[in-house]
Picture 1 (tube, rainbow, N blue to C red):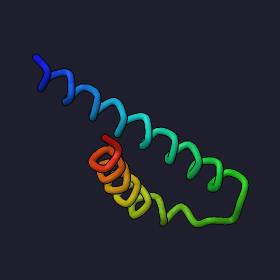
Picture 2 (picture 1 turned 120 degrees about the vertical axis):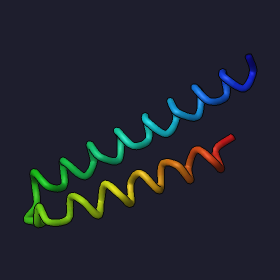
Picture 3 (picture 1 turned 90 degrees about the horizontal axis):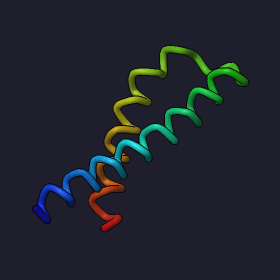
Length: 58
């Protein structure tokens, strides 16, 4: 039971961190002249960072 709790905690932390970073990126896209060609690499990097953040957070 403890393992399942840890899995859901990790998924929640990673998901929350990903949403925050993507909202920041969407604001940057909206209010600056950043090209939309950067969306795919940014999504990949944000996903990787959120996974690493979860790994080192707890």
